[in-house]
Image (cartoon, rainbow, N blue to C red; front, side, top):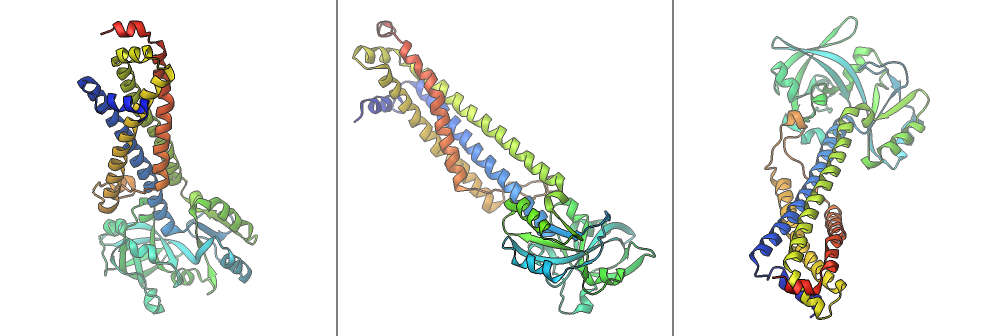
Length: 406
């Protein structure tokens, strides 16, 4: 057995000194808690970003194309999507799907309540998968019967509660124009996205309603919503789409449409970095304290080893091996604690949130294996590099004075 390893194993867990055992356990607990908190912090922040991005993307797409003019209202000017532009969008490998939309401001009047809303018209090509996942009750619009589809509407739970409506109810909606036009709709479904800016801002209906109210041609639309494959490439793909549009059209990404939400998400990264640094400092302080106390308690042993011919480097290795051993145990329990709580939350959603404040009803978790591995490696490297400094104290120990020290 290696000499340094043998001595290190004897002065660590197998030590008979009560005070050393206590310090060792505190150091292990410090590393364990630090790693567990770092794992959960990264998993929660990534979960938050992914969930909230998916909420906004699912309802509004990743990139929107509208007519290029000075119109800044909720109701976009109409345009015709030419065959060449449509071909370019279909052939773009970064685009998964796109569909036409049209919006129009309106007012809901029901049960003596009035609520301003933005009517979003879609057609049969709309991807309902995301809305279906967030339906509280009812169904989506059935476009197989065009006459009935124009009378059906999906509404958010936020708006439904405000005007005291539910699935199956009918009400009158007044569309803002001169003169105002009114239409009767039946609620076929109630959804809950969880992002107040979306829930209180939109209802979903048939795009042909907007076309008839505005006297548009059958092939005119108010805009195009585009969904891309990789959200991380949003800016690149958005710029590419813009470059390939005709001069009468312009595009903007979802980040530009909801800058407040994405700015907030970006700030979460800063908070995470600060927390990671603090947790690393906590773990390092625990290990440094433990190593210093073990060195001071073993001053007599260090003097004897030096008198037997052991070098300062050899004795330093003993204490560094001991430190690696303690760090390893701390990392093991830290991974078990961090990943255990992470997977528990991921599959049970036991820890809840106020959806009004956080956009989510539970704490989201997104665990990546590479993140866990990197955190373990960084913790080991940082701790060992810092622990070299207190281990240099060994070179200051005089064998004669140490042996006399009791």
